[in-house]
Amino acid sequence: MKKYILIIVSIILLACFFLILRSNEDWKTVLINENNPVPDNHKIKVVKLENVEVDKRIVGPLKKLLKQGRKENIKLKLDEGYRSKELQQKQREENISRLMSEEGMTAEQALIETNKYFAEVGKSEHQLGLAVDVVSEDFPYQEEAFADTDAGKWLADHGHEFGFIIRYPKDKVDITGKEYEPWHLRYVGKKVAKEIKDRGICLEEFIECNKK
Image (cartoon, rainbow, N blue to C red):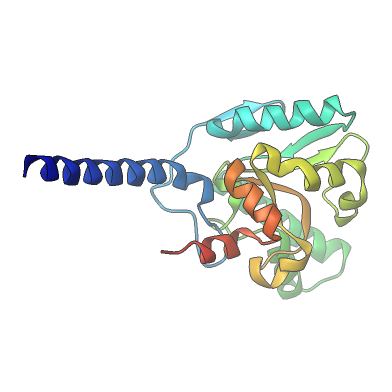
């Protein structure tokens, strides 16, 4: 009888261990989009890496990605990382003003266009500290043409090896709700990044497929 009780207790403890392990990894795949805002209780410790700030937990993988790319003569450059609520709002307002003054758009048109690239406050991955915009010294622009550069191709081919994915793929706009951003990387961990890369899916699809 004691033997069976010990077995049951061991199974329970093992199950608890895996639940704790899984919960400790959940931060990597937190979904932030139009329908899933940043949780009110979300807290992170940001640290500076080169010229941007990111979640302390992704500094190691990001350093390795940059080091390997540069070793292969890919001149990667960090462009943006963590954004506070205030900075997110400021960038949205500045882009709306620019579109109205330079492109002649109405306020409504400028807002619609801005929402394609700048999420509303509370709905941006940059507020997580897990997203980083990476360009190159040769092409320091956040433009779709970056995908055709050596740096853009290298990130698409090798980012997953360091736990990063191209968060907003060209063929997933209808699902992510965001235009193609080949410069926008999101850390999800090596295992998840490899699965997303191998299956040709986006984070929304990965989470949907792995719902219990």
